Length: 203
Ligand SMILES: CC(C)(COP(=O)(O)OP(=O)(O)OC[C@H]1O[C@@H](n2cnc3c(N)ncnc32)[C@H](O)[C@@H]1OP(=O)(O)O)[C@@H](O)C(=O)NCCC(=O)NCCS
Image (cartoon, rainbow, N blue to C red; front, side, top):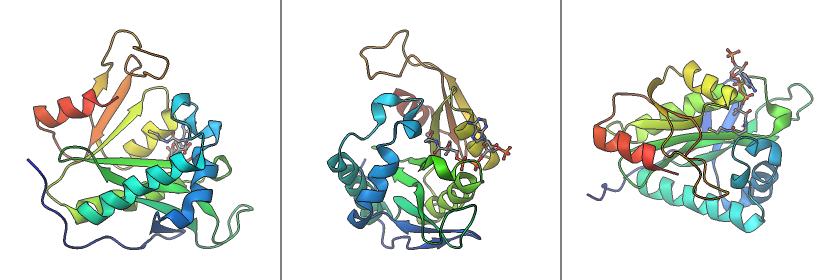
């Protein structure tokens, strides 16, 4: 069943140290710098963006999610200088996009120079709150590989519940397939069997 469109869109979000601004095509170069960096895809190397166009398409997907459902992914910008990073620095992205069914997919990706300072937890926390406020009736889910302890920890820090842990295939179907790797699914509420099955089936 198609979801009803959203009447209002989430704008800029603010935390103690960060600004989260909806990603636009003005962010393509910064976004590509982060998403094209192999260090930010250590656990899923095939996901690395290999062209600016790929980053632009991902941003367009986020813009469409925001237009239709009220929220998408955001550019995360530092408000004040910290640890050698200038005010206004593009640190990475965080937000949530609507899956092909009624569930948000929470996500974040930060530049290596910004790791280890609590930025992902801070940004993902307000993104989680924004997704809930845009569509309170829609569960927020997040998928993470067990081999990515930093990301697992972010989700634990947000008090999301672990709702599934496992692999969805015995062996990779191709070089880019990660379904044989152990994955964890977190959610902000119990999921229906149908929704959980759909999240597990994502590649
Ligand atoms: C995963 C990632 C978002 C973490 O960002 P970050 O800003 O360093 O995270 P935080 O500083 O908020 O740390 C959150 C927690 O994870 C822990 N953590 C961070 N990196 C870790 C690592 N590599 N191994 C173990 N724990 C780690 C921190 O110690 C902290 O735990 P604590 O609160 O108990 O002290 C960042 O490394 C990243 O962008 N990685 C590449 C993209 C990615 O994997 N995205 C998620 C895909 S599911």
